[in-house]
Image 1 (spheres, rainbow, N blue to C red):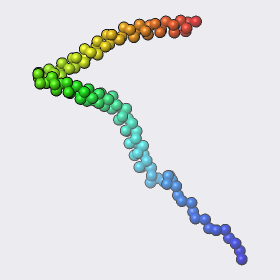
Image 2 (cartoon, rainbow, N blue to C red):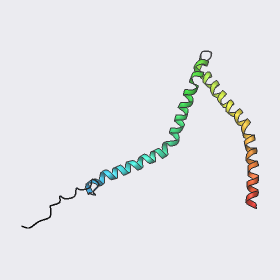
Image 3 (cartoon, helix red, strand yellow):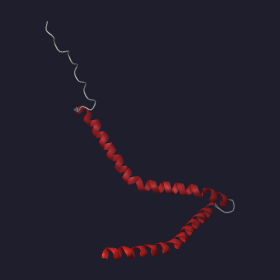
Image 4 (tube, one colour):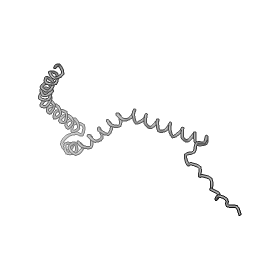
Length: 116
């Protein structure tokens, strides 16, 4: 009696096997991916500005609501934003001279070290 080797089943086809049938969906997915990346790149700044505006508007809404009892809504909004600009200006006026002096004080030793 002759002994034969057991018959091996064929190896299963890979799920990622290349066939021309797979090319159009893969090309569409690639184009869609690049399109989404381009859209995010183009729309990032406007969306960020929109989110900042919504956040700022919601943050000042309670103050505007309280002021609206005493004056028209437009005047209340203008007053609140004028106050915010005034506060930001005063903070900048107090910080910028000191910060610029510290940068100059830091730049002199660095420049002296580079020259040597």
